[in-house]
Image (cartoon, rainbow, N blue to C red; front, side, top):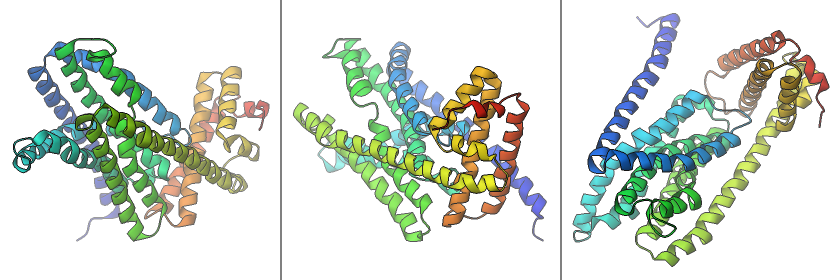
Length: 391
């Protein structure tokens, strides 16, 4: 006899709660193992120096991805899990396979496995382990992907976690060898290289895979849905391999040429793509709002304010000034709920929403109504919208 629908929903809720808990425990164990390996090989003080030095660039990188993700901020718990996977899970998994690549390189390259591991093994393994989280999230929580920007954000945050742990090790090792140093050696020189010139290196590589997964979320073509993420991964591993080649095998001029002729243009193209996709997201939301107002889910007077980031920001600022912080947070929650529903309605119309879209629509509509009621309950929050200058 098959389980009843209620039983199935209960089991699904149980796994929804249990899996993240088990995952966080596993990632915590991985983190402790990495800490133990680092302190036993290098020492606690160098590891602490490395952690502080690595903190500055990772904060800047995460801030940039959160800024990109302003239209529909991804769930904080998923972003935290993405960062934790990159910092702990992907790192320790890559460490195991990189050791294997080093041994294989010794066999293929007359005892010199370091070059093979750096140029071939590490890019293939590390990009695969970082992409694993984004792929798993896409397969299990496809509704979290509205397009390319979401793929870039999840991939970038995962890679930022990986880069943070990797930078701790590099800074710690250089501190042991050369101390804080100066502009030409030691922690300071390495900080300029990894923290100033290339803090987005790992996020840039992995974002190639994120772009592929984001495109897969936007198409109904099953072949494209499989091929494009693979091409994105190949691009990520290729860029990573070129980067490692320039820093391990090539000369200083090789690195400079690669940096300015390949990495800078690719980074500029990524910025252009993000800006273009954010404008696409704005058009999607703006296109859905009039029908949502016609259905009386939102007020007609709020359509213009919800249709742009500038209008939303002015609305929150006006409410914060006239009513207070609590009311401004209620309005922000209402704005996010409206965006999520607008994106889902667009995916349903384009046929990319997937199974269970009607149930999600009902849940998001309920969340929107509840968020608006919360804003209404905050005295003057929605009334203040009348005093906001419309663009």
